[in-house]
Length: 490
Image (tube, rainbow, N blue to C red; front, side):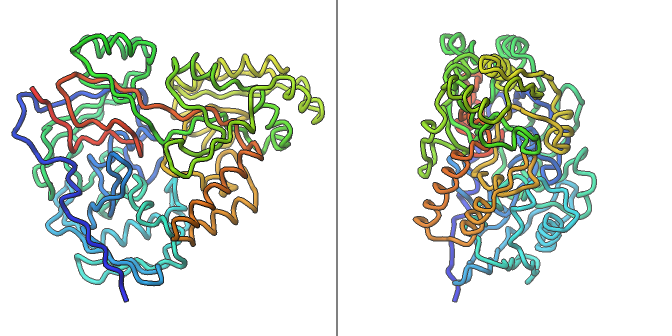
């Protein structure tokens, strides 16, 4: 027996296409340049900020409120035992190179993502898939090895977008998807340009052209928005200037929440950081409020675990790691770790560079010296994320509901706890909402009590835009600059 899930196709289009506005192009500012343009082969959030819902689409997708909506799958059925998903696909869909989309592309993509040699940064999203079967060109069946209560959620991630076997190998530099915008060109170090894909299967977007400009320097970002060189900067890097924009009727300031847990990551392969007493000492050395005020000018919510405060299952565990320098010094003495020097690697975002300087000063107060290295994004991904060559780093994890990274010993900070792995295995097999809630709260408490990382704050989404633009996401349930509903109002 099958449980039929009917979801209206209309939900895919977040807004109906209006009459073409007087202005049908937009230039958006971004702090970081993507290292490549294939979200199935790279972890950088900047890849998805350009490509998600614009160039590529998955079977499902996230809406601006974080809900899971139909995309290339118009509807689906789930077997009563929760092991079989039958997806009914949109018809008349083509990739930007003109090739037809079909169930074969879904099978290719999912098999590629879960393969032993997969380079997908979120390979665990596909771990429960046992077999993908093409029923007909518009129907594909996915059989799981065990029930996965988050499977439809997982299929909405940018890492699960559907690719064509004809273009998969070159998507890093010449992305080809099924989305409403097609790739035009990439002027490295400067911009990426997209244009409306006239063969798009769904509701056409109001915008005909979109340019993403890369401006890492906060002062330059402020100047670019003020001069009108950039129409919108959805993740604005200079929060100290937002009051100036709020006072100017030419602009709108858009403040929302993100899935970005900003943490001081600790490498558990380091002999001293593998000691929970040292990690707890670092947690007590940190003053979250000073970091939020000093680096983010008050924008951000303190967190005591790796979970978004806006989620109904969130536990406020900040009381497990209050700012307590005396306690930090005592723990370091107990662990024999006095006079320690640690390498602190900082990627380019403002929260990391500014926050890292503040953290270094706070650690110095309890006797921990740091050697700061400012890194470009590609270098950070290669050395820290992939190479695990670091002691400390400051990074915002912007993937949705990603507490499962603490059950992956091979993940870059190297936390290996069988209890956490058991909790995440139970969570995958649980579909009951109350049961999932209890497991998520248990997981939060385990990593907070173990002081796995220094949990700092939930990253706020602070954006600035021309006041005549509407449809930009206020919140960021996933790293994305979704342009499907963006338009000029005058």
